[in-house]
Length: 190
Image (cartoon, rainbow, N blue to C red; front, side):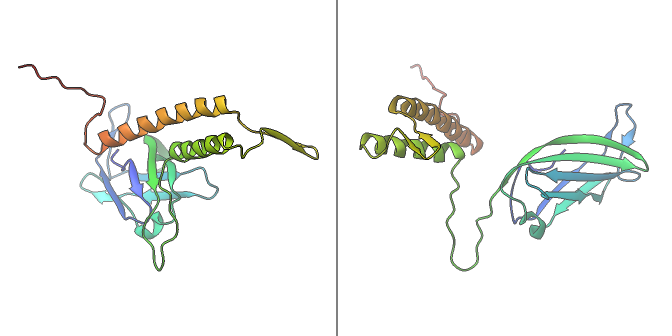
């Protein structure tokens, strides 16, 4: 299956799939089969169906820019189903990541493209600074509601875990961008 693993909302998305075979080696091609991709995410009413058009013995798919502009950023899941009459066969499934569109008209609004781990790390570091400066109460009660905040050792431990997660994300991004693995060490002998 050639559906992209990452798309940007608002882009035209195209891909092609070749003919395939079922478990008994019977050919599944565009001459007698219809192939559809069903895309869904965790939002109510969020989904998209893309039906393939004939391309050689396989199919070509197209998600218009107008349709993809409606995709919420995040993880989406897909299933490719071939059908002929009452027969239906799942020939592939997986997930893809939808990135937010950065296009705007007029004045641009705020955009935070950082990962959740980076946002959480910043919040924890702010909480540590606030706690050290004496600006936070550890526990208090208002009426019948209680609020307990992290204490400093817990925040420092959480900060360490988040720093490690952010470092892994940064390393994966370097590798994905073709800049190599920063953990590799090369040695030259003369």
